[in-house]
Structures are given as C-alpha cells and as structure tokens.
Image (cartoon, rainbow, N blue to C red; front, side, top):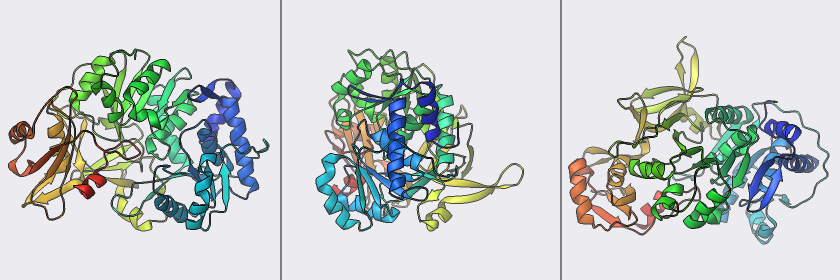
Length: 491
C-alpha cells in the first residue's frame, strides 16, 4: 500500500470490490462503489483548482455519502475539516475562516443555510452537495506522506477553537497500530458511534478500512434511544464497538441489554472519559463473550495507552487503569504529567505556533538524541501492577482554602457509590466550596444526606462538595461527553 490514508481504499476496492465498506440503515456502499465515487469527487475538486495545500470543509450528519466526501477530499490531495452540524453557525464560520476554506461539502437539506454561512465566510465560494455527480476520471496529484490529511477542532472550552492538524503519516501510524492491536478482520462489522468531528471516528474510518471491514454508521438520533441502539447492535451483528463509556452505560442502566443477544461482539473498547468500575463489571457480566479494552489519549496523539481488561470483576474501589504505553509510543512522567513521543503525534496546531511551543518539548532519548514529546496535561500514576491510572487534568486541579484538590478524584469517589451513575464536579472562581451534580443509578433511590455521609469516609474534608444536586440526566456535547462548560455557566 502507498503511504496515504486513501491507499487503504484503493487496496480493498481492487481485491474485494463487492465487499461492504460502509452501511447505514438498509443502505450499503461497497469498496468499489466508494472508491469510484471518491475518485469522481476528487476529480471534481481538482477541476475546481482544489488540491494539495487546500482545506475542504465537511458539514454533514451521518449518511452513506459521508465516507465518499472524506475519501474524495483525501484523494484530491486536500485536507478535510470536519464540522459539527449541531454547532452554532458563528462557530462554524469561525473555523472556516481560520482554515481559509473556499469549498464546503454538505447535504442538500442544508441548502437554505448556505447564503447565511457564506455571508459570514467571504472566502467560501464553492458549495458542493453530497449528491452532486462528477465525472469518474481522476489522476492522483503529487503528494507527500507528511501532507495534511485532516484538521480537528477542539471544543474551545478554554478559548477559541484549536485546530489539530494530522498528516497522512501520523494518521496511518495510529490506524495501522490499532488494526493490529485489535486484530481487525475483513469479516468484522464495526459500529461507528462517534461523529466525524470527534477523533474517535478515525478508528472505524481508517483502521477499519485498512483491513477491509464493514463500518456500520450509527445515526445520531439512535445515540439517545437506548432500546433502538441495542436493537441495532444485535441486528447488525456488530463485532467491534468503540465509544465513550456512557454510550453503553445508558443501555445497561435502562435495561436495554437484558433481552439482546450481544454474542457477536469480539471487542468493546472505551475512550474519551473514565469508565467507572461498577459499570464495567455490569457490562462485562452482560457481554461475557466480548473482550473489554480501556484506551487513553488526546486527539493530538490518537491513542497513547491501552488496557485490555481480564475477564474477571474489577475492584469497585479502584479506578480502571488506562494501561501501558502503546508499542509505538514512548512516555515520560514529569511532575505527574504525562509526556508522549509517538509517530501518531499531530503535525501541530493550525496556525498556532504559540501553542506548539508550549505543548511540544524536546527530551533526549536513550542515546541522548533530542526527540519531540507532547505535554498532554494529563496527570497519571502507576498502580501496584505497573499499569498507569488517570489521576485528572492539570487544568482541573484547583486550590481551595489553601488545599490542592483534583476535581476528577472527587467525581470518581462519587461514582464509586452504588446509587450514583455519573458525576460532575465544578468550582467557580472565588468560591469557597465545590459543587457536585449527580445522576442516580436506575432503580436506586437516594438523598444527598447519604452521599455526604459516604464522601466523608473517602475524601478529605476540603474535598467534600458544599452542594450536591441530583439531576435526571446530564446535557452532553455532540461527542457524547458531559458538557461541563454548560454546567459552570448555569450553576
């Protein structure tokens, strides 16, 4: 295979043209069909003078045309910029202006929005709808493995959105490793739960395609319907599942797994947020045929550590380890913070050399040769088995009444209680105590007095929240994580 992400598609389109590459609902897209339509889209982009050095926005919910847009842009030599369809238009415009995007691929259902968006993005002159037909002829432009493949933008919770630029080389380093680690096979059916603008989607779109697997895209609306989602997992006979923990926790808590046959699942893989031990144990009990894996890593690096869990109950008091460094990663721990050298590391932040300078540092290797390390901002420690455990974020450490407190530790303590499903803890600037929000495990009834009594037995007095509020459910970001920024603004 060549050094580019789209070489995966070229290989399988030639060797197994009729095999299903992507599926959504009852619609399949074979490798040959995907390759042919992606080639045509690439030719259409090149015909509009869009190619290497350019960025193309993809502004779409999941559909059978989405992978065509991704691979069409890659084959054109340009980099794609995935946009959150649920984000405010002002934020979308900010990203498009920042990237200098002149061409946007979107759905025809969004046609009425385009004049308003173009008014905010003067340089956006080309709108291509996913259903647009192009001539099939395509000649691959001259490219380099280090050329940009895509730019992911963060939530911007601590300022304007930051663009994370990955090259074909860095993205392939991750995809090749992940495909080998989980022994992805052509016979696998992989559930694509994450949206395109979330880094976790690269697992299915690239690692899955690298092995000729079938990627079953999960419609966004099903992520909030536990009964329908569990039915899809069963009906599609999915063999590999990768998501934030909440995606399956909600199925277990609401009884959506009780009558489902999940025996086809080989791997259940989590990332994005910490997995609570009690939920892990319950899920393993209901999916006894699957192996469970806890992975860890920021979008800047893809995956850094992996912990493939044994098929036995995890100690409900201890955090689930994030495991050991991936074979392609070298790690350092400085003042508790994890630093990583990896061939899967981003090329850098888009047009933010100031962020590159603070996040990427040089450290000598065993031979004394300087190597680039990414400062993750994640705090880690080793457990008694030599596995790494996640202790929290540098930017989530606070000082309260003179005492240093890690908010993530307080959240983990709350979630260890049988009656608590999820927890989020915040501290407003100038406040003298913490505020906690919790959801209650299905079938449990509790009051805050019981939680206070429990917390006083496991936390220092300073770390016990001054206020605990029980809520029905957390509002979430489009990537499925708890929206802590929103909690801070409304509390």
